[in-house]
Every structure is written in structure tokens, then in C-alpha cells.
Image (cartoon, rainbow, N blue to C red; front, side, top):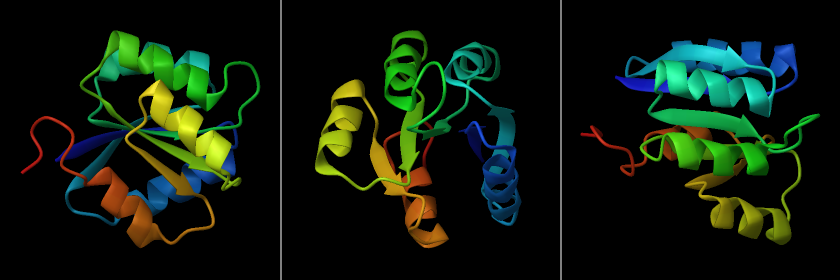
Length: 124
């Protein structure tokens, strides 16, 4: 089972992602966070396999939070989500330690592929 933490400042986005991921038999949503700061606390507590993280959030943005997650739980794979598909953001995401960068406009299949990538421990 792939344990996922969803991080997005918009409740409707978190709810939509949770509903879609709940349809997958190999994925369990273990928590939700509305900010980068909240994500760091929950990563330590919940120890998810994958963190789905929005790039643009008030306060601590997703790239800064990615660096924080990497520092406290390097075993978690981070998939950054963004409305903006720009090369600079993708480069920053990769430099921060994100395993994947998925546009929010892309289909669920692309997101599921990123979640299921074999970069996290315990992946079959």
C-alpha cells in the first residue's frame, strides 16, 4: 500500500485528489495539509511514502516545503503539483528533491504514474 499525504491550500483540490486516489486499491491517503508548515509536521508524524505537494501556497511554498521534507524524511517521495508548467519551476523542483512535477491540468493517469514510480522504499 502506498501511503500518500496531500498538501494544497485549497480544500476543494485536496478533496478532489482524495476522492480520485481512494478509487485506487494500492493507494491510501493518510492525511491532508493546507500549508507547507503543516505538511512538515504531518510528514514527521505520518511518515508517508509519497507527498503530493502544491507548488504555490501562501506562507511556505511547495518548493521550500520539499526541501524541508527531504531534510526530515528523505525516504518520502515528493510529487509537486502546479497549474504552471514552466521550465524554471521544474528545475527548482528537481533541485529541491522532488521526484516528479505534474501539471494540475494533466490527467489522473500521469499523476498515478508519478505516485507509483519505483523510487520509494517498499515499492514492489
